[in-house]
Length: 278
Image (tube, rainbow, N blue to C red; front, side, top):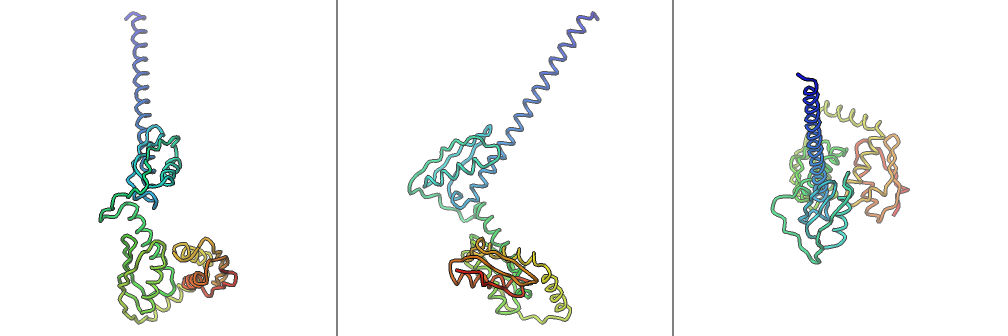
């Protein structure tokens, strides 16, 4: 084969190969951008669904080339602005076209009997918070409780070994952030503790007595989960099981509840609250 023909064929092959590789690169880039846009759309929508100020509104999100387009209707300018800020907070979003209409007196569509995604998450958080508070309490060893939450309404089922344990479970539940009501169906079934169970309980308490950092973390978490205590305003320190609380609260009732909640945590020997003021 003449050499110039060989060169022509080789050159043609190189051109075709370069075109093919360029097409693959363009296609890969397009797919990558589409995946990024889908991720951004999902992140924005999920945040709207979880936000108590936006979840009731029927908002739509579309993202293309790092630009988010928002549509829907809200009743206040502040909600429209919030939607923009949330979208801009998502990684990669460089521009927001906010087409949301502000309509004074706008009433969002009535929710169906089914919970929205945001409400399901809220209920799951409430259930987890109550279960945690019950597990951390040193006065609920004889409690076998199942916690169910729907639309913020909590139902407690199972058994408690005493009326006081049942009552405490109800108080811990009703004082949890986001709880609207508590249906306490715990049955009181007195239990006789065996020697082995008693020894295990004592050993468990002894281990907790040594874990000052654990106690501090659980007291702080209990405050943060509670609807009637400003947990962020309370400083908690623990030394050999003695919990010291300091800070400024709004009332004597809030102070008394903070002390009660701290005393209830496993491993707490006593609570010092002279620096907890109102």
